Amino acid sequence: MLKEVLVVEGKMDTVAVKKAVDADTIETGGFTLAPYTLARIEAAYRKRGIIILTDPDGAGERIRRFLTERFPNAGQAFVPREEAFAHHDVGIEQAKPEAIRKALSKVRFQEMEPRKEFSSRDLFLSGCSGSPEASRKRDRLGAILGIGYGNVKKMVERLNHYGVTREEFAAALRQIEQEMHQKS
Image (cartoon, rainbow, N blue to C red; front, side, top):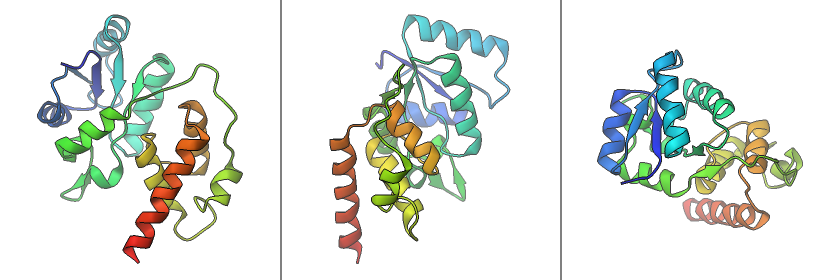
C-alpha cells in the first residue's frame, strides 16, 4: 500500500486509482472543497503525506494550485493529457492503470526555495516555444519529466519549482527528438 494518500477530484477517479495501485484516496468533490474535506486532507498531509493527482485540465489545475498553496510539501503527480483522454473526456478516471502507475513513479515535490535554473529562453532555444510544434513538445516534455503540461510560463515555473536538472531536461529533449524522427 502506498504510504501517502492520493488527493483526487471525484469518485470515478478513486475507482481508476484503485485499479492501478493499492492506495487510500480523498476526493475533493470539485473545487468547492468543503471544510470537512479540507480537514481530512490536512490530517492526511500531517500524518502520512499527500500526493495531488488532479485531472489534466483547467479545473484540475485550479484545484492543484489551491491545494499546493495550502499544503506546500505535497507530492505532485501528473497524468499527461493524451494518457487521460477517452470518450471525448479528459480526466484521471479516463486513464489506464499503467498511466496512473507511471505518473506515481514520477512524483515531484515543490522546492521551498525555487531555483532560477530555467527561463523562457531555454524553452525557445529547445523549440518548446515559438515554433509550430512547440505546444506538442511542451506537453511531451512535461510528460517525460513528470511535471504536467502548461504554457511557457507554467512550464518554466514547474522546471524550476520541481528541481528538474539540466541533465534531465537535455535527456527529455533528446527523447522527444528521437520520437519525432521515428514518426517522420
